[in-house]
Image (cartoon, rainbow, N blue to C red; front, side, top):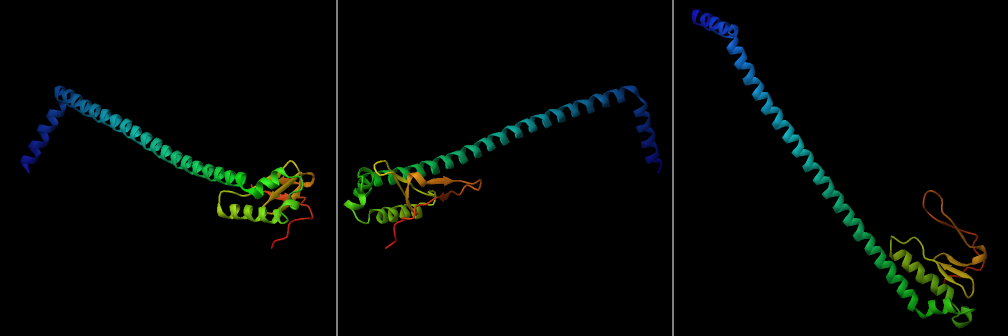
Length: 171
């Protein structure tokens, strides 16, 4: 017990010594300075790593979207090229009375458009317009330009309005 008391008194006398307190304060200050420098460096390094990860993630996401859009545009170009070289479409586009050349032209075109719309999930609708006979063909039917319009509500789904009464009949 006496050893413990003597240790306590020696420690107390060292603490009362102003050189000890001064040196201890300097030592604690240096340790605290190193600690703060390491915290700052670690925080700065972690922030840079997180920024790089986020930018890398955003870049990958943009590349995925770009590839998807390029694929969609490629599919749309394919459909346009197919419709452009198709003899039924050419008859519809360039004839004043296409039903006299091909009797069931509107039904056949509508079936083609239904196939394209159903075959490609990214395509909502396709409209073919003939300036020679002022007719619009969609996957939903045949319309004249005088009573054809599209209404798109905020939900994004478009609704055909004012269809003509002479829609082609399905076979």
